[in-house]
Length: 164
Image (tube, helix red, strand yellow):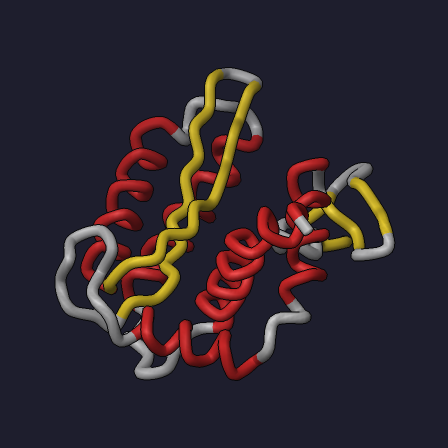
C-alpha cells in the first residue's frame, strides 16, 4: 500500500500525485509543496532551531523540556461510520502523555460503535496511545520535530518569498 509523502498515512484508494510525490488529499499535496521547499533550508539553521525548541520550555504548560513531537490517536464510530485520526503536538512528555491518555479514553468511549471498522480500529488506536505513553524519553530530538521545524521555517518565509 502507498503512503502519503506528507503525513505518512496509508492511501487505500485514489490520492493525488505530482512532481513532489503521492498524497492522500489536496491538503497534503499543498503541504508537500512546502515540504519540497523546506529541503532548501540550510541544515545548520534547522539544527540550531530544533535544539533550541527541544531544550526550551513546553509551549503548552510552560514547564521544562525536553520538548518534542508527541502523537495522539482517536477513533469514533456511529453505526456504519468510523472516523480515525492522529494529532501531532509539540510539547513536553507530560503534556504529550495527557493528550494520549485523553485520546485513548475518548476512543474507548466512542470508538466501538461502528461496524466493522469501529471494532477493528478502536483497539489499534488505543494501543498506539498506550505505546506512545510507555516509550522512554529521548535525549535527542525526533525526526518529526525536525520536519515540524523545517515546515515552520518555510511557512514563515513563504509570505516574504511570495512578495518578492
